[in-house]
Amino acid sequence: MRSPYDNLGVKPTASADEIRKAFRKLAKQWHPDMKPGDKQAEARFREINAAYDLLSDPAKRARFDRGEIDAEGREHAYSGGGPFRGGAGQRPEAGGFHFDFGNGGAGVEDIFSDLFGHHFAHRGPGAFHMRGEDRRHSLTVEFLDAAKGAIRRVDLPGGRSLDVTIPAGLKDGQTLRLKGQGDSGRGGAGAEPGDLLLEVRVAPHRLFRRVGDDIHLDISVTLAEAVEGGRITVPTVAGQVSLAVPRGSNTGTVLRLKGQGIKGGDQYVTLKVTLPERVDDELAGFIHDWSARHPYDPRAGR
Image 1 (cartoon, rainbow, N blue to C red):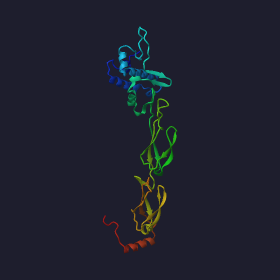
Image 2 (cartoon, rainbow, N blue to C red; image 1 turned 30 degrees about the vertical axis):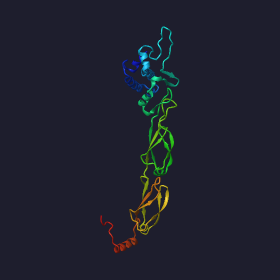
Image 3 (spheres, rainbow, N blue to C red; image 1 turned 90 degrees about the horizontal axis):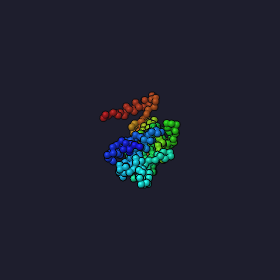
């Protein structure tokens, strides 16, 4: 049987820190979760783990160095027929590994957390689980769905589909985290699955523009509506509403619809005075006569 020093690749004079560093390096290389189904890796990891179990405990290490216990922590037989005592260490269990570190195992969980990050967890005596990887997926949602909220079916790689709740007010570029919908965890039924991260793109709308939680909209009005004023119907994210156009409005006039934006924001309507597609002689003659009597320069001062 190889010496625990040989299994970790350190000298018998190695410090506790050197032993810890050697174990970290080898454990990361040979951990069975890193080499699924590799029997050689499983066997090598058992050796590494047993060696660290013994050498990380100062009392056990001292007894080994004095020849009182062997590399597995078992008492050497004495001529006086002293008791044989099995030492703490790794032992195979049905369905996987069971690691009993005893008092010398202090800090082992920290080592694995350092090696594998938050994906690695110790769940009870001897049970080591690795959290599944998070997965990313892009999702395009319609403008009004993002504004008002909706439930949408999302098709994922591998043939899976999920009904995803789109929260009201979702912004372009936000990420939705669906807990437990990523890759499966490793190490048995208790391993936590990863999450699914949906990176959302909000499709542009042909009429609406979003600025913060406000909605901006350009809308055309007739010459008569601009000059005389009146009421017009305009769209909002919640539906059609009536809007009063003040007498003498002009292109660029901005009117506010309070509370008609997203999550309590407002909607701002910018008017565009629009002539008919065909200007007939009657309208042209009227404008000519009126302009001759009421000259003005809209570009004055520019």
